[in-house]
Image (cartoon, rainbow, N blue to C red):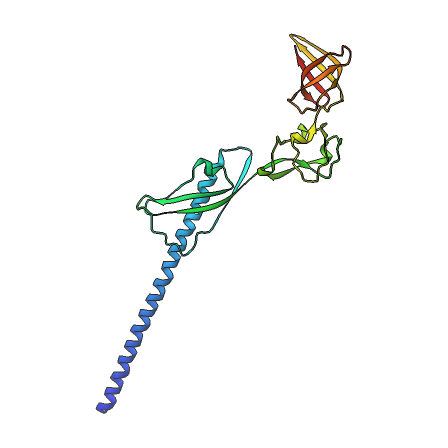
Amino acid sequence: MTSTEHENVTMDNLKYTNMKSVLCLILFILCAMMVLPVQATQRHTTIEQGVERYLLDALAGSQADTNVQVEVVGIDSRIAIPECAEGFTYHADDDALAQSYISVRVSCRNNDWYLFSSAQVSRTRQIVVTAGMISPGTVLSAENLQLADIDVKRLRHTAYSGMEQLIGARMKRRVREGSPVQANMLCFVCKGDRITITARTAGMQVKTSGIAQQDGVVGDTIEVVNASSKKSVIAEVASAQTVVVNL
C-alpha cells in the first residue's frame, strides 16, 4: 500500500468515527427530548387525577342520596409543572364546592409553585318521574310512574325517591313524559274533595267525613269542614283522601 493509499484509508476511518460520534450525539438529544415531555405529561395527568379524587372525596358527604360525577378540564400542556417530592395539595373553599364549575388550587409544599385547575361537577339523584304525558286530574299509579337519574339543578320543589309514596295522588296540571314529580304539581287531598277525617285522642279514634278547603300533600296542614257539624278544623294530610286531627 502506498503512502497516499494509507492516508486515504486513515481519512475514511476518521470520517466514519466522526459520523458515528455525531449520530450518537443526535440519538442522545432525541432521547432526552422524548423523556422530558413524557415526564411533564405524567405530572399533568397526576394533577388532573388528584383534582378528581379531591373533589369526589370533598363532595361525598354533602348528600348521601346524590350521585356526583367530576370531569376535570385538561391542563394546558405548555404549563411547566415542577417535581414535587412531598406531593401536590388541593383546596377549594366551601362556596366553590357548592357550584357546578369548581376551581381547585393545586400547590406544592416544596416551593411556592401553584396553579388553578377547573372541573365540571354534575349531581344527579334517582327520583320518580312521569312515564308518559299526564293530564290534570290523573290519579298516579305504578303504570304512569318510573325512576330516573335527574340533575338536581332541575329540582325546585320536594321530589320523591319511591313510587309507593305517590300512589293515589292526583296531578294538578299537564306534565310531559320524563318530568320529575314534585310536590307543587300534585295533591293527595285536593280542594273540594270529600275526605275522611280521623280524630285521635288518648286511646280513641273517631272517623267522620268532610270536605277539603285546600290542596295538600302528605305532611301538609290544611283546612277541612266536617260534613255533619259544618265546623272548620285544621288537619294534617295523612294519605290520599285522608286527614288527621289530633285532639
